[in-house]
Length: 367
Image 1: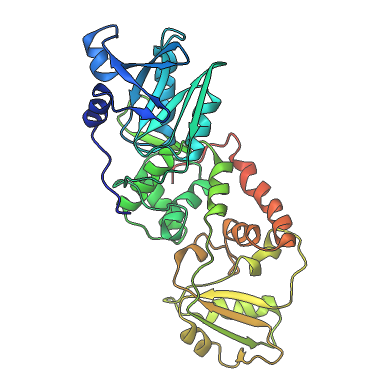
Image 2 (image 1 turned 180 degrees about the vertical axis):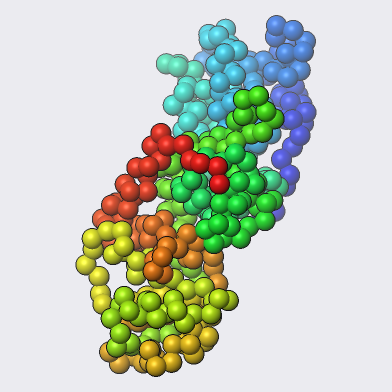
């Protein structure tokens, strides 16, 4: 199904005024009933006849379907409407199931243009429909901000929860080994703001708008839910006679400046948590051939008694925020463990607590 642009606000309002608003088996008719003509043009009132009863709803239309937009619409309608004279109803292009659940929890009706919706009159009426796919594309948002290079923005907020600007967030990402253009950082920030994960507030006495993390636990959960392991293009197993710590120092000393290398999340567990692991050392690297060449004499490619595995991947997330000693970021370690087996998931909880603890009520410094 080809996605289309969301309709303009005027087009959505026109549907209401032409009595095209419906959620089978319910259909609504628009009536001239509002405090002023201006309010009618922006917030039409519709009537619903059901079971011999007449119910009136005042509508707030939003052209975007984000959590922030729906939350703002609910807040406005709760202030504007006074049941049973007027019940609140949100109208947006698309309502996913989680948004419908939010509306139902707050006893607010909502209808989209795809066939989903909830109409609720407390203790009298409830119609709930979901499962219709989204027909509209969002031109301003990245498809999945929690995967690939875009995920670096989310990870940066878990490391420093507040920034003076989008440019400051971009600088923090670059400082920790990532590389994103400003436009991408800005789009991801807008998406996170729409999900109510971060907020953007105007600094007192200035025109600047700083950004602050609101829901670190939700952000970490979304990173985990969307996590996909780095795409590996080549793998080499082999052995070294050096002790693990000595081998890592040798790696760090010999590696080319043009090659990135770090232990995988699983390989870095010991730096953050207690977990029994196999003696195999695992590393990500961006250029496997160059790495093997530089390790001549210290590493032998072989499957016999192998104790080192190199995984070639170009994806930036695995290298982002790496620590001294070729140790992966605690966030990368957490994501690999949290999507692993039961024992790994149990260990991941240790890291989760450690990642979130400093963010509770924390204020990050401008980077």
